[in-house]
Length: 436
Ligand code: PMP
Image (cartoon, rainbow, N blue to C red):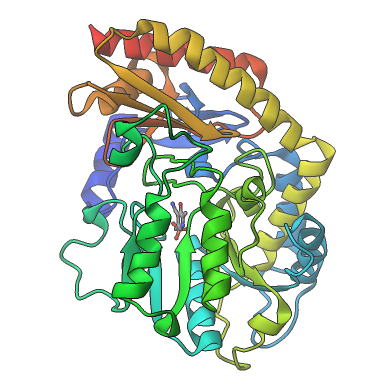
């Protein structure tokens, strides 16, 4: 038997430092909202593997589907043949798509690969090259997606030159927006100052002409960039600009999709349909699966043979995704997300806010169970210290996000009322200790 410390040391010795872990936890098992380390110690998991294990760890129905599929067919190479689990999955996905126009799919393994597939499709279909991305966006770490990612310099510094033709527009981050801050009584999450939209229009006039711009790629709620919810008017206006200029709108729903925000897809909150939607993470409860969807006419502008990949749309992952979607219905997951979300927001307001002295500000924001807490007036490293305290003293996993002092809560979508109560209790204890 090796101690957790010894195993972690072995990991540090032999696993690339470039990955880096925010804890030294060595886990061996997980169930529902809890993970267990090699010594059997239990931790409340409000990270869900960054929004992946949305049904809780090892949901019995998903486990069973995976076991059965693994005994039947593991790999069906998509460039050689169709496989049944993929076809069945499409049958399950179609009814939950935000539009009946989304009827053509391409599956990959990771979010980054799917974002790259969306970019390839957009460029090929429009015969244009340039891309507009949004400040603070995260789209992955591969060469192409790293060039689209602007949430932190660590993802790109030293790896250039990056993919050319990428233009960055501001994301509507009202909490830090100078216009919004100057007259907070005039602008709010519903009535945006429209500065970000004006900046997109300027980009199209001054830097990347509409007839050179293939697509805009945007997260419906900023994930790695700070859990930022855009004002209501942002997406409809973006949609309008895209349609008017024959630019494709790509929504990266990798983190927001599959119920995380209380609707199946976050764009549904804004009443806007993208041309291409990117999916991953929560789709298959931890098994590697991602994909893009669009209408068939657009998808089929790419010639046969230009898409594919050895593992794309793996059969076992597809079976996990089918089971995941069945559980969504059977256990009314969206209903739970919305109930637990109201509980969480109200508890955060009543338990965390009163702990703070007047000079510390707190913005509690998010949709569904994608919740950010941005503190102002705290020393740098404050939220990292809170996250560490929650882990070391209260056996709870909480992540941070963005470049400011923001905690993010991403519990499983199956989280119970008691677990939300317990989680906020642990978090408030951690905040109290760090404030001292
Ligand atoms: N897009 C978004 C919005 C993401 O949050 C992530 C992962 N955090 C990715 C893309 C990249 O996904 P992957 O790590 O699976 O490549």
